[in-house]
Amino acid sequence: MKRKSAHCITRRRFVGTSAALGGFTLIPSGVLAQVGRPGANERFVVAHIGVGGMGGVHLGNMLQYQKEGKVRIAAVCDVDEKRLADAASKAGPGVDPYRDYRYILQRKDIDAVLIATPDHWHGVQAAHACESGKHVYVEKPSSVTIEEGKAMVAAARTNKVAVQVGAQGRTGKGAWQTCRAIRNGIVGTVRRVECWHYANPVDGNPVPDCEPPASLDWDMWLGPLPWRPYNPRYCPGVFRWFLESGGGQIRDRGAHQFSTILWCMNADKQISFTVDAKGTPPTKGLWDCPVDMEVVYEFKNPDWTLVWGQPGNKVGKTEFGQTFKGDKGQLILEWEGAYRGAEPDAVNFKLPPGGQEVYRTDEYADFNMNHKADWFKSIREGHLRPAVDIEVAHRTATLCILGNISYILGRKLAWDGEKQQVVGDEQANRLLSRPQRFPYIL
Image (cartoon, rainbow, N blue to C red; front, side, top):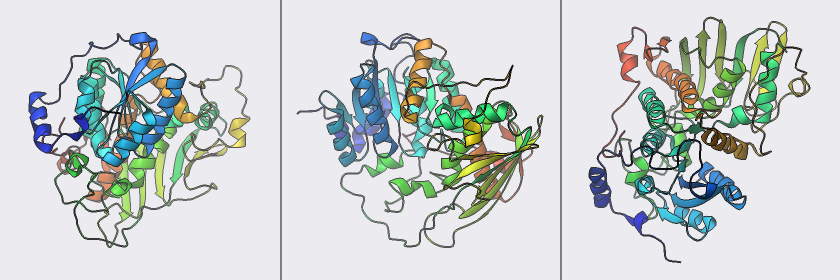
């Protein structure tokens, strides 16, 4: 089958397109379906940006939705031609492949995009998608800098689109059962939550720089990051072990765990806190994330402590989780409450008379499908605030990012959530943003 050739663009054409598009502000908000409506033929028209790893999971979910007549997949995009070809084959006839995501954002027939690119691309691509009037599902963590997160929130609000971030705990059954139990006093007043998680890996077998695979557009993969020669230790999935791009376990799994913890603690609006991180740096290889790490967050009014332990005190049976410690006992939640179920005490918990019920989406048994159903629901109903709205995700990512900044600087930081600045620390505030490489910029 003959497909469009847009995915085969050259570097020169990319830069030319960037200039022509005027800094990526592509389509005025409002050219698509009106807020609260799915678009033409009562179906959402969707496109995928990044189709490896979780991107493949998202594509599978959308294929199921397509079978149910709820969406139509219009396009797929990836910087690796092998992955792109595989995704296009799975998506079927009539789905256009692209290597440059901006061609997708130019299309007025597309209502929404699902972004599953490496973390350093999330902020730029999500903000540009919002500016083009498209609803966004973007993988966690929402951003790699505080300034990117602020830009994402502003883009979503200004352009009146729904942005769901892929921290599925808040639509997972286990997290819901744990949340309603914690909020209704199963262990009394919780003053401390402790996470455990296995260590970051060490690059024990460094290799020299080399030419990138023929199928990979290395310049596009780097995107906003500074230019560097290709090395197999940079990608695909191992970007996670660089503070600059992936941020290690705390910015990856922490985005899941912290989101669920804030929900259970009803603490989304506790946006100011202190953070104190200590860690053990690797002694060899390219990867620079700390091997072991402990980060202590202190919140006020109400007062409670959050501890990221890497490895921490493993009290559960699986690789990671958290313990809610109250004045009447403690409750464990393995993972973040999506991939693993709640403890029996939470599963069997009976809501007391006058108790507080918490939000639950249960359209699908599969939590990934459920998370997307919640996103679509927010669009159809017009409130544009899904379970892990971009503002919630930005506040969660702020915890993760500041944990790494505290580790880098080797000192305790006080975060003013209203001003979104570190109090009295100019050096720390300079690390809240960083230059982006043209033309891959906000």
